[in-house]
Image (tube, rainbow, N blue to C red):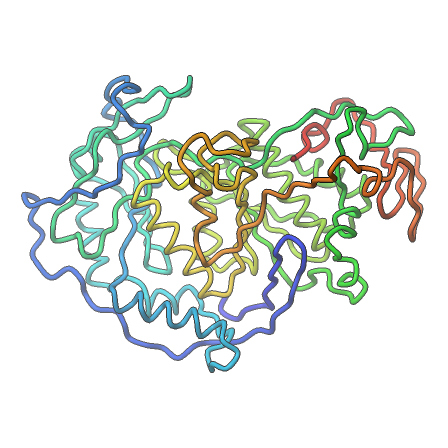
Length: 476
């Protein structure tokens, strides 16, 4: 989008609409960083670019030479001058006294100011093609080159073999050693985002499964003392209702949901019907091959994010962007890049991650650069911090770290809004906060398939021949 719609900032509880602003004064900060002839005999290692679980004890041998390595993302560096100017711009965009306040950039403007030069891009893409790789495209922000090839081509160009690793019963492909690149490319090439398929994890925790409800039974209070929330409860607890009363419901704003598995749109409409959420039908954007449905956990994550984005901002446009993962690249990364590099939506939200210790150096650079680009374009980037806080390297649900102290890597950037880990502690006084009977506030809706009352409520969900994914787990 060249001209920007108003931006929505949604920090899990409140939506603010900011006025649109337009182009910022251009600066010519591009200059070639590759200054010496490309000599394949002089190489340098990309330190820290081997996944920490690609260890000898998990190694199961070399990958087939023809193993497809699709949609790899070569990460390009910015010069020190460009990075300093970008940080200054990002500060000015948030300074009400600056003429650059809320003057968001388009991806094209971002690329011209803070991306790699034409000369450097030509040299880098030419080098990739000389090793047989297919170059798909250079990102509009000029920070990433997408290319594809085989394991043999990766080994020949980057001097690292691709091996199979078996960890906790799961098999993965990964580079066995740190990649190497020609010394001449080092000033502009940070590395490959990933040469492995140790993917990020959905950041929800599956609790109990909810069976189809008994007519008339409360669905927010469980027999073991647990509770669940529905959209109306959320609006009460986080005081969103005053905004709704002012007519602030996300109209004119778009929210991009990051995904790597398809959703069943019937789940979305059932959610909206069950809880009387007047949300619009989500737009589904498939970036590349359609991944389809490949696990309940992945589908649950996607469905949770789509339904709750629409529940909190019912008048917003929800654009679910889904990208298939490959042997070398997480679909989450591809969906993020698509949203940001096309300036697709005003808000981007995702609920994936892993602890900082699980990322390579090139991944860390790619994450930081993409978050900066989103901020410069005025995209509000929301990410789940996870429910484990500083115990990010432990299993979800842990409250005390057993591994290294580390948060979700995606939540560590200062250029996104990290939200999560919400936990209610009633100190044994549940009755103070959770009603055992229906509380009627402003509306009652009767119907043949469900009964709904506003506020803290009892809900009878629609009857189905089988439970929908969103009915089964409770995100705790």
